[in-house]
Image (tube, rainbow over all chains, first blue to last red):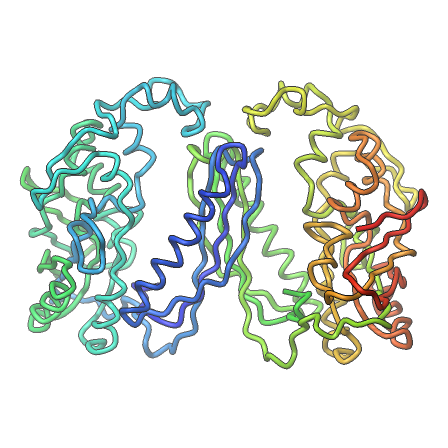
Length: 301
Length: 301
């Protein structure tokens, strides 16, 4: 919703399916009260989300452990929507980091977010987790792809801030919300924003779904991928092309704007503890294309 | 939503979690287009539901086969909500049947609806289904409760209408919607309806959640339970108390009204092919209680 310009007056309804033989009521309570805590925190930033309750079903026949889904609804004036149709050659792209510690987060966020989690878990964690936790994976999978990583969840890692955390924490970091930052930008600087793209499914190539047919996106100044993605890449031996297609690699939200407004947007983001920089630009082109410059060279999509 | 009085201007968003190794894209297509077909059919009755799309996630680590959830949202005037606070001694209860064939249904509906399905499947179907379809149940269950019934899905059963159908069809009957009937009642006879209770989770005891503290509900004229519930009860050996607590037993929606308006409500329901009758009444009492008269005697809750 945020990347369509909606940041307030939200209704949230949750849908939880669980196997009650594995997931006791205490887990449900923690999920529900944790959601409410998050909404309370967002309320302090003027982002009002009402928890409408929802449905919890005991369906152990279909669910191994638990699935937690939620649906957000809002009413919003059409004139205040971001539709991405203003994206054009000449735009610069301000990238917002998905990792670090925003001043509305209570600890370091690895930036892993919510895509590629299944493969990350299997590629990073050690074989014995499969034997110990049968309920945590699809038992019809070939054993050669089930928990084939070099790490234990307790393995220690030094993150960018210098803090030492364990790998389990990094794999479980919540997906960072940009709601407080975007509320400020959308309420007071709406006209400066030509487009918003959230690097979720599709990672750094997600923009190809939303930019016009005939532009070239050049991303030559992305954040250096934070440590969790280095750990995943070392463990999985995936090449850069695959990594940038699956994961955000640290640069999580793209704001398409004009060169003169970029600095102001960057300072606002930084004032919330969310790192930001100009990560690239939109150029004229005969076809839709994307170039990503990494330390190793150029990737073309 | 219907039993709060909302029957129109609905938004629907679906949330599908699947194991892509077991559930191919064709299944997703059938579910999505089937939902749209249902909404198109409801539109013919003036019940407008807009399919907003939704989210489909490949999460084989947590889902054995597939879970299909949906969230409905609507805006509605407060003055047109049914809150059940008008339910009072003197009310009669018109019960709407959940089985048979409404004139908006394409075939006989067993009335099984969406509660108790897991136990119904295990109690009714034959042992070999477990061996053949491991993905269809919680493999951590004790074998003594997994598919312990006497039936094959192809076993033939004569239903109330005289038609012969197989047990698989009866177990898979869709939950009947009462939307077309209720639209007519809520639009033109709103003032006659003091309460609406849908006998979903809790079956015939669901009313205890919604009626006032100090009334006795007497249900002495419920529909005779249709064949599917007889099959389940014979297979599971459950007593009547348990059956009426888990299943609707054929009487699916309760309309609390006045004696003089009941006949009119019943004829409107029947005009849609949905059988209806006065199934009971609300009496004065010192405490909240429920009496169900069955062929075998009285059940007290």
